[in-house]
Image 1 (cartoon, chains in turn cyan, orange, green, blue):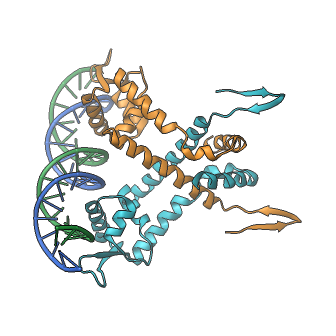
Image 2 (cartoon, chains in turn purple, orange, green, yellow):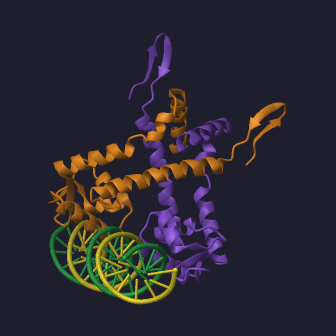
Image 3 (cartoon, chains in turn green, yellow, brown, purple):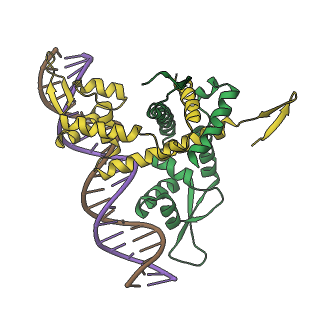
Length: 148
Length: 148
DNA sequence: TAAGATTGATAAATCAATCTTA
DNA sequence: TAAGATTGATTTATCAATCTTA
């Protein structure tokens, strides 16, 4: 990797974007593994977690709509919703007008578990404590540029 | 979320660390899904990718050592190495002194595929192009603080 | 006929028992 | 007896038919 170099009389720190991205990516992946391990402790598979997080509290959604949003197969959805329903985390119901459609709704229990997962997942990692307010502010202004 | 506030006569932008982390995490997860999709196009499962990346070119390692580094079950390892060996990406061999042990080594072909995956994975996402050199430098100085 | 969902067959991954050598 | 690896049984997840209603 190149170190600082002088260009037109100014000191310039050349940065390897690949190196920056690797650091960031590896860090986030480590957090992801940690989250999945925590979910496993609660007897939840990655699929269960994914499904719970996609559901919106208080909002009954047709299976078909969920499968599309999620870019997954309809049968995979049936399988996952079966699992969650057995544990009492979601409930299936009929569609008001179209009898082919089945809608899915989080139960109170499901909302609770989901909220817990979300809190755990989006709680800033311990490493964030090492950032000063100034650094956090800097990071805060950079992230939207990446995601927009 | 709180906006800028005046504290002791200075304007201070209060930042919600959770919001920053959520943005970063979601961004990296999206990249991860993209990588897995690309690997699937090549007929590789997430497990295959994981296994290939963990192996070190030119370095024959005992199965047992791999299982430990990787925090996975020995039988899962056997299963994955079987798959890679069938495709000619790795090769098993005997241990020089302990006849119980089998060592695993990447083939030339395996090294090539692995290098391709690594390149793809650590190539900065397109979104990085939106960052100015100054912003990239700022990010570059923040990442090590998170990972150390 | 087509849309929506489920069931049955297949692949991927993990867990428990078995086999070989130290 | 224990370490190292594999095989066989279970679970998780996906793909290809099947069934029901619009």
